[in-house]
Image (cartoon, rainbow, N blue to C red; front, side, top):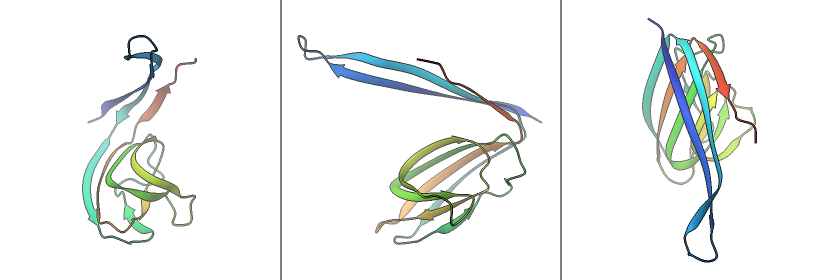
Length: 134
C-alpha cells in the first residue's frame, strides 16, 4: 500500500533590537518536501565505534534504482559522511541531514567518540519540493 510523507522545515533568523533588548524576526521561510506514492519506509539506529574511517552502512532494501527517496540522518556526535560511494565527496561535521534524493549507502567516519546515529528513509514514490522565492 502506498503512502505520502511531508517534511516541513522552518528557517528563522532573529536579530537583536536596540531599544527593547529582545529580538525581531529578520528572516522567516517555510520549505516543504513531499513524497507521494511512497512504497517503502525504514528506520534504523546504530552505534558505531570511535575512530572508524569510511564504515559502510547499507540502506537496504533501498538502492539507486528505487526512485523518490527522502533520507533523515541524525547523530549524537558530528561525523563525516560520504553518500553512495566510499570515494564520494565528504560532507564534514554532520549532526543532522535531511535529503531528497536517491541514497543506497552511507560511508561514515567518526571522531574519537563512539557515535549513535539513526536513519529514516522513505522511497518508491515521487518527491516534490516547494522552495519559496525571496
